[in-house]
Length: 86
Image (cartoon, rainbow, N blue to C red; front, side, top):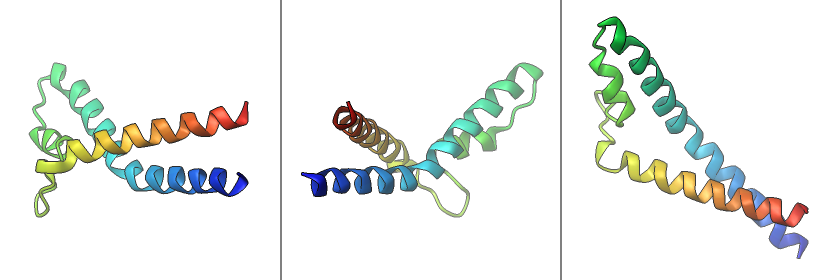
């Protein structure tokens, strides 16, 4: 049983590590854009980053799907880890 709990922790850590950077980019770019918009500054490149278009590399077709699935998996695995703790 302890091995199963350890495997859940490993899965949670890997998913969290892989999804942390895209989530951080999405959060920061969306927040900065929303602050600049009322000031009349149109930083459209922030929206491109927010949706996964990084210029040379364009992840837009699957960027939001990846972030969504990674978030769901992180939440579910985190809840499962919490259930075991209590």
